[in-house]
Amino acid sequence: MSEAISEKVKRSLQDLGIGDEAAVTALLGELRATLDRDLASGQDAETLRIHWLGRKQGLIGAANDNWLKTAPGPLKRVTGKLINELRKHAEESIDALKNAATQELAGERVDVTLPGIRREIGAHHPVQWVMQEIEEIFRSMGYSVETGPEIETDYYNFEALNFPPDHPARDTQDTLFLAGSGNYLLRTHTSPVQIRTMEKQKPPVRAVVLGKVYRRDAPDASHSFMFHQMECFAVDTNVSLCDLKGTLNEFTRRFFGPHVKTRFRPSFFPFTEPSAELDIGCLICGGSGCPVCKRTGWVELLGSGMIDPALYGFVGYDPEKVSGFAFGCGADRLALMKYGINDIQLLWQGDKRFLRQFR
Ligand code: PHE
Image (cartoon, rainbow, N blue to C red; front, top):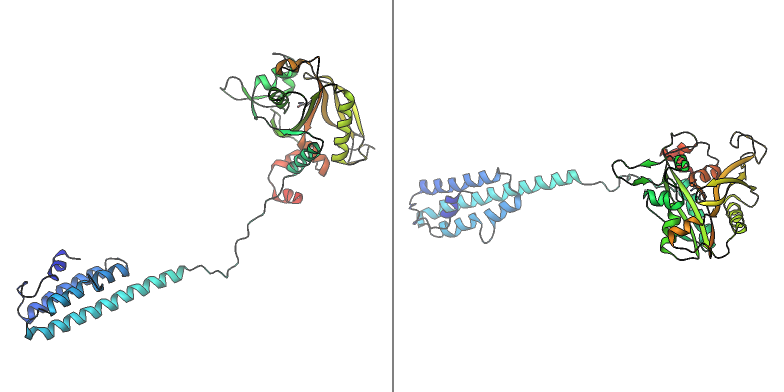
């Protein structure tokens, strides 16, 4: 788009000093050369059309107005003829550009009749099903659902749960500490949420906790460095061991079915006194003995006990007035038993053929 020619079309032939046919032909040749450069410049067809053929500011229209109309008699015919030829050339070339652009688009058009790419539908994870079911069982008994952080402090994971510093019971937890963080660790159990809940809530408290916990365990068929726990606890006046047993019976029957057998075995946890572990009759062999129950007919299910009164001192409860129970266990293990899965590693390998079965 030569500046010169766009200026020239604004002036008359007299002004430009053009007085014979050769000069007119040269002038229109210059205009045509400019047009051809524009056509080859890669500009889009509509921009070119407005610039050259536009009704108001098009160069060819201006040439028509300023040159043809001022052309002296003998030059009118040739000027008109050359301008018309130029207009025709411009129209055809710009149309051709337009068509080429449309065809290019057509080549890219999406064929809406092609079959789509099917999106895979996600599935509930078996541990999710188990946790959801546990949550529903305890909600129906009037429990609230509480959560706490997975990155915990020594205080909540141990100290306030009555693990004295350097007490050997800490070793049993295989704790993963956060490097360089001073006091932070990955919680080894959901029991710290007992403390966190009692700190913010006066008795009576009835709560269930479901969440991830971490331990420095070598992975094998029954160990994983990350797993899920469920924790349940209740504090009120006159809560007794009978309440604990009744609640455990109710929970195990609703979760595993009405015929499940249970038994208590004495145990130890720093935060419960007395403590007991609950076994259930093996669901695989029905109690006659198999590899899963190591031929005993019983499978360890969970840890439980009456909340040690020492804990109440940490949360400002009066140990003379209240009492409570707590129990907790691995939700992953519940899933293994419920669905008859024999390797905990299967849960976290992300194999779709495995996971698909739990939709
Ligand atoms: N927190 C214990 C564990 O992880 C389980 C437990 C919970 C035991 C509540 C007693 C009471 O082993």
